[in-house]
Length: 446
Image 1: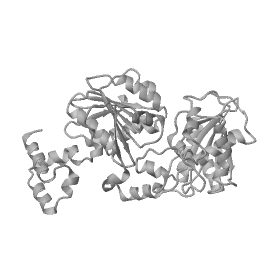
Image 2: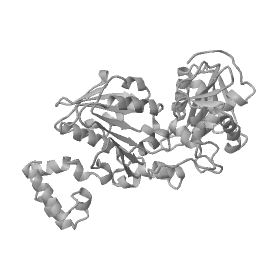
Image 3: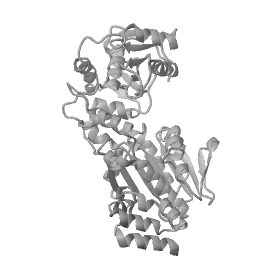
Image 4: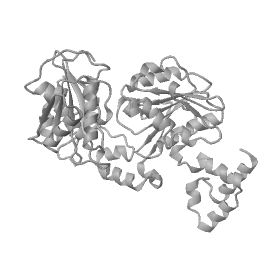
């Protein structure tokens, strides 16, 4: 720290011993204003850019020996900023030269970790990195290099080596255990290779594994901790959707919530039959549970892809559900899943919208086989026979489908939030395994 900057820190500590923006803000206005106006331009610029001054304690890496810093945060809690600032600090101080950036997909790496509002490019100042999209890497003027990887392709991590890593949203990684293990094999450069993990907590094996590792240190933050930096519309939307629910404790308060004992599914049941890849399948369907409304605040449109093999075993292949979609957008998304998986048919619930569902689907994919289904029983009654298939070990998930599995393990009768992903799953497996047409019109390989 230069002498002028040491003066800034010393002056702040005189009036705010914890030396943070939060403590400075709590001082009497006249004291705070006197201090701020006493700074020259260089001191002001340094203070503006000095992350430890602005960060909350949970956003700063703990002291002491550790290998993994696990940042558990609610939605919008500032965990991405914490991860990016930690990497930026290592690079600016010359303590890291080869870095791994691992996200759920390569798109997430680029759009969140690199180019997002709290990503590495947005935070850079003098030592500004340059992104090479063709090689999926970030280059800093001082020679540091960060390589992007998709957790959905664990083998891509085989071979490269690093002295630091940032893993984002590991609780959502489809092949979490494999991707994590490959990353650990590559974290072998330098005297003290370390990594930061930023994620919303879920009671999945990788998160439990990290929490039980003695070389892991953990910090937590709720959505409310970052309230001052969240848009009112976002905050209202999140609170409306999750506050007061078990899932809200996970998504907002960053608690690790175990399965609801009254739910039809448990993670142990799903984990017991989980597979990495599906075998040859004789039928594949895309099931759609359309929302009643459209727009930014609309419920999710459930879109789940599932198949069945020649022996009658079901496989849940993909979850492409998404919220805030217009009818044309969710229909196009379902049609893309139909094409991507060479599916036999689309199964769509018609309770919400009736013939409109058929009209929209025909508009985006006129030649697709379409079956409209109508719910005549409650969600719980429709779900029970499908849950029984899981209990008998007749259904496997291909990789992890985090948000779908959250709904499955939290759904109980009378739930206020409609489980749209779960509804789509039920329609898909009912058509494949419980309907009259459960059979084998054609054989294909994924």
